[in-house]
Length: 76
Ligand SMILES: [Zn+2]
Image (cartoon, rainbow, N blue to C red; front, side, top):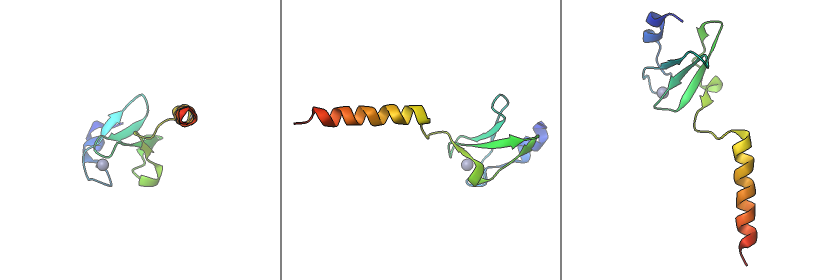
């Protein structure tokens, strides 16, 4: 992606500058903890398409639920 283009792009939420993740092909907003996808070299700065970096992965969520159930069953 063009570095000059990247400098012009800002987060649609906080208007802050974005970090280009070359491997993931995403533009990351460190303030909002969101990653906007890049498709065919076109950054899609849409909140609806952004990935929440703080959201746990599906596998982690199921482990957390199992742990919660176990702790509950330990209660008298
Ligand atoms: Zn932002």
